[in-house]
Length: 85
Image 1 (cartoon, helix red, strand yellow):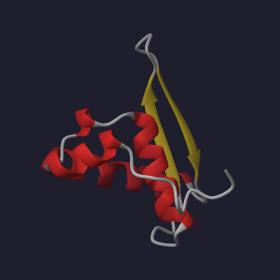
Image 2 (tube, one colour):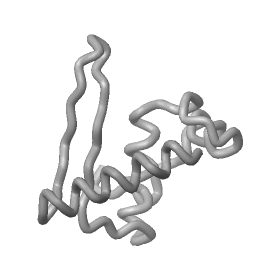
Image 3 (cartoon, one colour):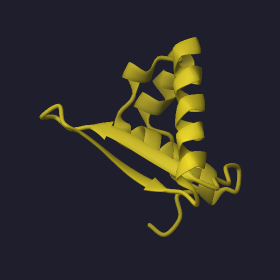
Image 4 (cartoon, one colour):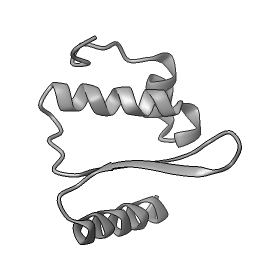
């Protein structure tokens, strides 16, 4: 699939949208939702950080950013938003 613009919404994504609870969807659902928004032109990220926990409880990340200090600021802003929820 070259574009996720028309990717269908999964049942888990729909459920999470109603409940506003992150445990109701999968990490893949989150990525597909983000890719759908990017491919539709609704989200235009200038930087991106994806952090994850593997099943063995180790942590990893993938990132694309122009400046490390900017990414640290984005990370802190995301942490603030997460705590407020």
